Image 1 (tube, one colour):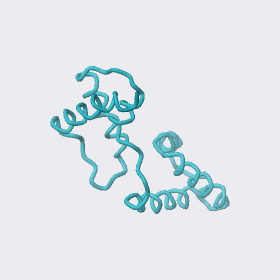
Image 2 (cartoon, one colour):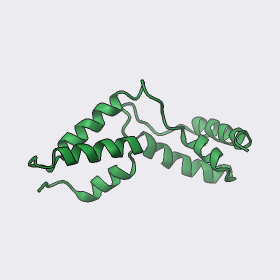
Image 3 (cartoon, helix red, strand yellow):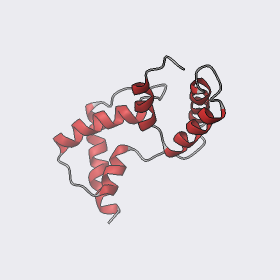
Image 4 (cartoon, one colour):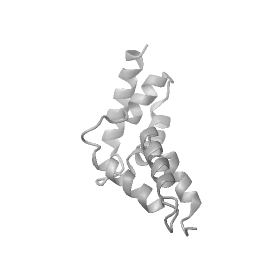
Length: 119
């Protein structure tokens, strides 16, 4: 069995897209006889899939998903939520950084305008 922290595996799993989950699970199943239970092969497959991120479509940014949910959120609450959600969403990006206050304001404006676009 592997020495990997299963809490970290679960956290990583929760942040994967459905496509990544399907690929990761398949890679683990196909390589389950490896000494690490197929985890290295699965992680390598996800890394390879993410390298194609510029070629395939992306999940909408957090502000657009919030707008689509049509839940009204005040700016202060949005700013706190957005900073955390942005970090979670982009934690695996190579050039990951937290959004600046101006970027949060711009995202809130997109969210506010986007709420009426879906309904």
